[in-house]
Image 1 (cartoon, rainbow, N blue to C red):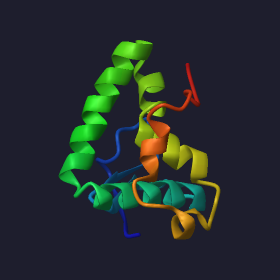
Image 2 (image 1 turned 90 degrees about the vertical axis):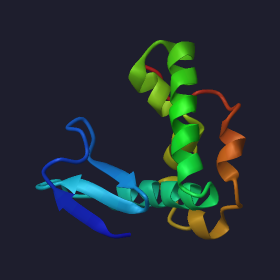
Image 3 (image 1 turned 180 degrees about the vertical axis):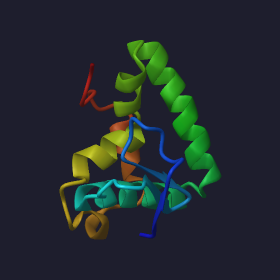
Image 4 (image 1 turned 60 degrees about the horizontal axis):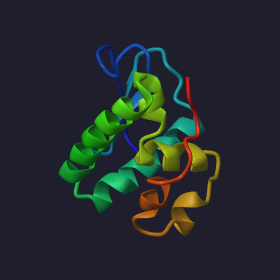
Length: 115
């Protein structure tokens, strides 16, 4: 995964952001192997959904989760894409064993993090 260091992305509350398969990190941030794995899972999700549909689904699901939990960070952690990535970002072999559309299993699972 290509990492692009810059002074604008991601927003200050985050270490990195994946946009269309490129990982953006602020200067001075050390991107961990776990973060790279997490964002690699997102890259796979994006490809499955032809990028545009990933971002559309992500936004709509975030709005639904925001209405459900009434907290922006809780909504973020409970998006199905994030659930899959957080649940598997410590497993180095996850992407080789991952089945297509695996994130769908996380649509109905119990939330993993709340605030």
